[in-house]
Image 1 (cartoon, rainbow, N blue to C red):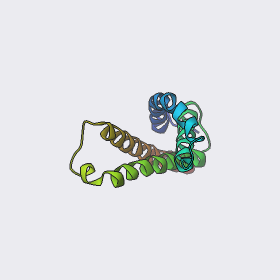
Image 2 (image 1 turned 90 degrees about the vertical axis):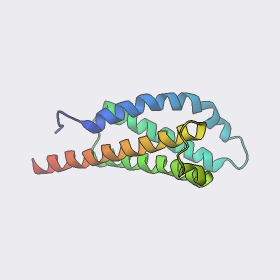
Image 3 (image 1 turned 180 degrees about the vertical axis):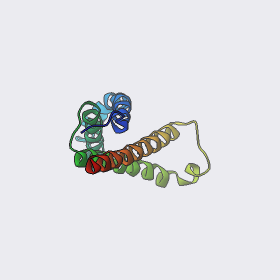
Image 4 (image 1 turned 60 degrees about the horizontal axis):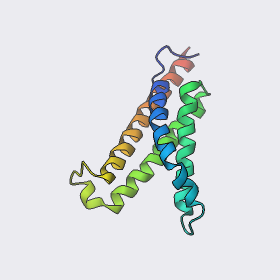
Length: 135
């Protein structure tokens, strides 16, 4: 059973579209990290990012089982919060004093927006699950 207003699907569609830009620009750096000694943690993170992007794309096109959809959104939140925390730890003083218009600020706001959007989608996945169980 699907609802007429599948908000998580709409969010996934937007994130998959915007994520396509990131996927395009990060393709070569991702491959390069496999050949740089000591870069394996970053490689794993980038591969997880591609997995999340694929999850958004899949959720935007299909209606996977709710538990899988919930796993996609939880993964999205975790992957984006890891980078968000890394940015704050790396430059914590500036992060809490309102940096707005530089390169790191863009990454910070992107990660924050995606984590919030994923949390909203997760909330609505649970609402859809409740509606399905009540029917």
